[in-house]
Every structure is written in C-alpha cells, then in structure tokens.
Image (tube, rainbow, N blue to C red; front, side, top):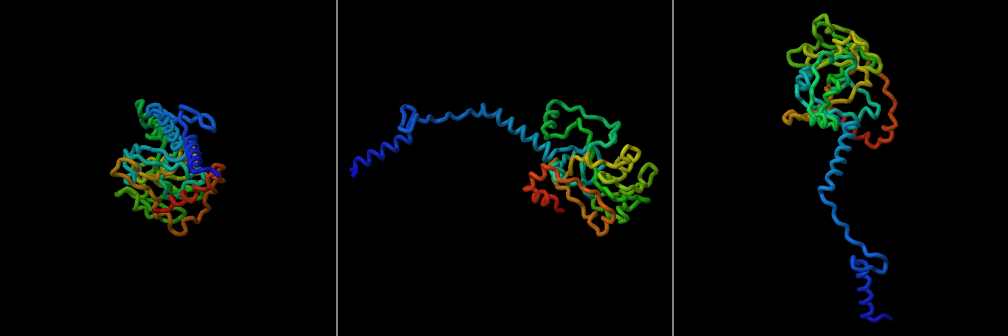
Amino acid sequence: MTSGNDSGAAEGDRVTSEYSTAEGEGPGGPARTPKKQRSFWKELPILIGIALVLALLIKTFLVQAFSIPSDSMQNTLQQGDRVLVDKLTPWFGSEPERGEVVVFHDPDNWLAGEPTADPNALQTFLSWIGLMPSAEEKDLIKRVVGVGGDTVECKGTGPLKVNGKALDERSYVYAGNTPCSVDDQGGQFKVKVPKGYIWVMGDHRQNSRDSRYNQSDEHQGMVPVKDVVGRAVVIAWPINRWDNLPEPDTFDQAGLNAQPAAAGPAVAPQGAALLGVVPVVLWRRRKQ
C-alpha cells in the first residue's frame, strides 16, 4: 500500500510532467514550447487576400453591384442609384419572370453611341472585386413584361396587354406616362416572345429605349435569357433610397399564363450540389 506521502509525490510528478516547460523534458517526450503569437501586421496581408477572394467569389456567383446611368426606370430607380443583383438564382435553372427588374448584357448594340466612362485606378480595382459597377461591361436594366410563349401588345396609349390580358401598371409606370407610346418607331407593336427570350420595357415608358425600339436587331428586340446577369433585388445606395425591389402584383391576375411558357433548362450540376439552400432562395423570391 502506498503511503499518503508517496501518493502526494506521485501526484506531484504527474502534474509536473503535463505542464513541462522549455527548461526540461517530461516522461512523455520533449517539452512543448508556447507558440509565439503572430504579429497583426504579418497577418494583415493574409486577411486582405482572403477578403479579396471572398469578394471575387461573391461577385461571380452571388451578388454584384450595378449603377443606374439613366432615367429609363424612373420612378422605380433613379439615376445614380446602386442596385444589388442576385446572380445565384439562375444557378438553379430559374429563368426571369414577368415583373422582375433584370440586368442583362447588351444583346445587339443597344448602347451604340452612348458615352463610356473613364474610371481611375481605384474605381477599376473596386469594380474588379465587385464593390463598384464595372465601366467596361455594357449592361442594361429593364423590367420583364413578357417571357417565352407570351404575346405582348400595345395599341394606342394602352393598356399594355400580355396574352390578351390588360395590365394595370400604375404601381410602377412613371407618373404622367401612358403604358404605350403613340409613335411610328416601335411604340405600337404585337410580338410573340420565343422560348429562351424575354421582352423588356422601362418603367419611364416615354424615355426608355427598350425592346420596342430595337426590333430591327438580330433578336427582333428580344433579350436572350443567356444574356441576363440576374435580378435586381435591392437598392443599396444612396442610404435614403434603401429598398427592396419586389415583383408587382400586376402579373398575378388569372389567365395570364394562357400561352405556353418557355421551358426552363435542367438544373445545373452545381445546383444539385447546393440543394440545401433551395429553401432560402424560395423564401427570398416570395412577394413582399
């Protein structure tokens, strides 16, 4: 039987061996030396690098900022507004829907003659990581009023009709504008939107060069779905303009889907791998 004193000594030896210092070695091997904390200034470049990588990933796959350069979407959007565009949803095979405000690449020289910006070095860098709109990309922003399979029509001053149903657009068409423009350059039309395309119009109907006025291009004024960057979901700047951009109730009326809609593409493999976030995407897409 071990005496009380011997037990105390053994207990003392065990504690000492577990908390060995650099001056000696314990029974279990070399003593562990405390790690010296890395200097903040040495870690800073690593942190900046991680932040840049995350910013690039977010810009590429999640959201991107865009600037509104004109008055064509008044009063929904004002010139100088910064909007955030959802680039994630299309990864799940979703196509633009009626009523959404979307950003898309210039389909066929719609921006011919428009002045191009000359950004400085800082603006170029910030646009590269997605914190500022890119001055090099030729993108436009309009509202989707027709999708694949729809017949869109304007007669006189309106109302605008989709599949024969008159739309009440008072919630977003610029005050004082008529839904349709009475002119001979495209304001009067009746078009059938092919699958894989959308028909877009600005909310400031008498000040928007949209699908109506580009019917002579290679797509007859339609915008290929593949050219859509994403849906504008939030006005992020200036602060006093903070707001979301929900789909209006205009396109919820019964019978609007009388024509067959465009067939959506199969879900991409990336989407299948990310099915866990589907509920989040669906929640975001609910009408406010």
